[in-house]
Amino acid sequence: MTTTIDLTRETLTDQFKRPITYLRISVTDKCNLRCVYCMPEAGLAWLPKNELLSYEEIAKLVEAAAFAGVRSVRLSGGEPLIRRDLHRLVAVIHAVDGIDDISLSTNGLLLAEQMAELKAAGLRRVNVSLDTLRADRFEAIARRAGLERVLAGIDAAIDAGMQPVKINVVVMRGQNDDEIADFAEWTKRRPVFVRFIEVMPVHENVGLQRDAYVSSDEILDRVRTIGELLPSIGPGGNGPARYFAFDGAPGAVGVISPLSHDYCERCNRVRLTADGRLRLCLFGDQDVDLRTPLRAGESTEGLGDILRSAMLIKPERHHLRLGETSARMRAFSEIGG
Ligand code: SAM
Image (cartoon, rainbow, N blue to C red; front, side):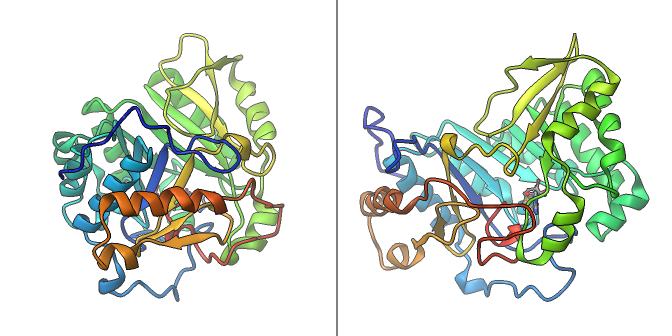
């Protein structure tokens, strides 16, 4: 990596003057789970290998993004830990001038065995997705077994000193909403930030989403049944969660409410798909192909300029409504949720 970043440059902003400092990268469209709200059980076509960005190509795009003004990167997927030697990518991104924060979203299945290498490569914080604390339910929701391994992954992250460790819980009525209090209890004992997420509509789950949706206000009311919640500034990071904590608790509870309280006016992010498209909104169709210019040999500065001009098509907000899906997206795994 040779490009020197001028950190005094104006930050990247879109046409609505929102600073765009955060890039979420999907490193693979594949996953080792099939969560009911996220992916179909079968029938998603995987990207052919030659369409997938290599680690070297991702690193070059991160360098371009840093040149344009991005400061923070999250690796996601699909399931990022199924891509071989992910720690190699973490190390390369960690070394990019201008990137001062690198994080990972994982389902946790492979986290315990990779934690030490990831930490050594520069990873400092992690989000683990976990929707239930009951083994039989885990299999029903994720359509695969693995609760014990995910819990071991969370323990490994805490023991390795990841800060913060965030737990993402997608809440679904009739499937796991009776575990809201159990998850919230965790935050009284452990330094975890449990974030309850409103289930969002994708092509495959519109019906489920309509029936299973629980608003963040209802979620918070149910957390309050086990104790008084105080507003909390939360653990930092780039996300849209609103945080609350029990008095004296080492952790906190957060809610992410894209439907009931959208946070588009604070949107600070863009996404890079595993095949090199810059996606401007999770729920919009606007995207820009970065892989073609990258493979044609475009310079870091040139790619950074393409990123800058892409900001002109970042939409002001999503138009999601309960029971509707707006994008040509079958699963979050295609984009890196
Ligand atoms: N495999 C990784 C993981 O499990 O965190 C990263 C990818 S996953 C698509 C990223 C996040 O998106 C997870 O927290 C998952 O629960 C969330 N997600 C996927 N589909 C969703 C939906 N329809 N509504 C709300 N959250 C969703």
